[in-house]
Length: 520
Image: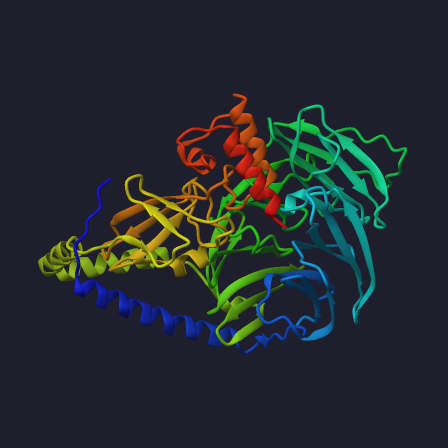
């Protein structure tokens, strides 16, 4: 693919006008939502939290969690977003878990030595008027980095994937006592998740089938827990989580229906949205963040419209028939109830009709204008260039090198497309609009005519598995590549070549393990 390097003042003015119209539209959308929006105030010492997540706590209550450096907070909110109670802990939270009236803050830690690591779990009993009974348990030698490394069931039992015992999931009770274990005869577990109705789902490093196990109500030390049964079900791609007992979303933004009789999964929609910003109502309607300030609504696998919030959408949660969002703007953070008056229904057909009518009315004049515009657009420079030293572009290979944990929102602030617009796609072709930029993602520059004039493949050194982060899965995959049991595509090969010598050796594996050891 060859890309042009010409310029056009006309396109610059056109884009500026478009940006102005977008800003006006965004303001008007938020004005509609702001009637019910509530400004959020975080506890003292939290000025710019990360990992902010809204959860439903039932009975028209919500929980808002976040972390900043080595402190984390919880806010108990009523249905209108008013703070009922709050709590803080002196630990960095990876993510929260809520199940049956109990909130757990999952807080991995790492000491000064290589072998000093584990996960601390702070648990609160959530009541209507307060957060009660904080319990802390310390699980040493349990490695937690991602949501699918550690989960909890409705009885308060914790399931740990990365343990001192290879190919074994360890179960702990609410007090941290080692309760039981689930061993694999099929190789290493790569992911786990417990559904709201207590069904354990597992994925494997060397297995293309889904593990499913209905968990018993009572589990004791003497309980014989067999490994999950394997099924040729559709399998989530990358990380995944349950939005309800009936609906699951994966890292690609795909939605899955959970079959009530077999508990197997069937893909229902490709949203291209954000795994970490989605919610399901009791009606079956699903909301998924698909743009910075928007969430698409899906029913029965079909998109029915878009909710616009006018500010960056951070998190979504739903309780029965009630949904809410947390948004952030330059003027602060807000809790916004999600109501149907925010829903803009798709109008593709009328748009097409309007386009055809306009074309027929203008005739040759329109064609001449389009030809002129096309010629003008083809004379422009529309190329991706970097504003940050943290981003390196290799023009010979058409690759862009990014640090791990680089979000798409952050990347857009580091790049510019002169006289054009920037778009991104995940490796599977689904639009990338939020979350981490992963190895294999493609960044595209488009001119005013919508033509692609520049393209770069994202390389995140060390990210072989395509998550945008460095995890133990990456080191395991590189080990398999070195022993000849796995292969990599071109992008993942570049990500694995950490010493830059054009080949994969144990030197690359050692560098990757050093980087993993630096991770908190």
